[in-house]
Amino acid sequence: METLANRPHHFMEAFSPIPPKWVESATHALTFSCPRCGEAASVATAVWINRRAPVYTHNHKRKWQEFYQCECGTAWWAWSSDRPPNPWQVNEPQEETPPSLDPLTGLGDSWGSFEP
Image (cartoon, rainbow, N blue to C red; front, side):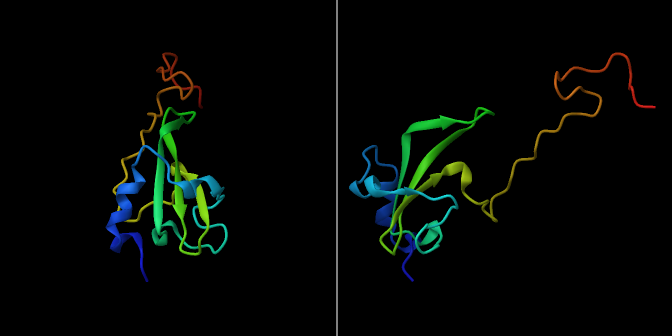
């Protein structure tokens, strides 16, 4: 099966500032796969990432539209934040609020705990 991994010339198109023509017909995929045949993004024949217009989420993180041309001929896009986790990626530990701090204000409780 031919995938992006063994077709390196398509990687250059992914970061081009000018979108390829095929993105004009792309539909928004609600799952991170081709809406027509269900194939994963990893088997796409072409990719383009719209880095010209990032969207900022409620927690100030950026997300982009990622466009994929599936091997079935369907063009689709999904938000970068919706991409499934990579099993080989080392995740940064989540920042936790110490129990002595108020989760809303981030301030310490100078009165002590209200719990019995």
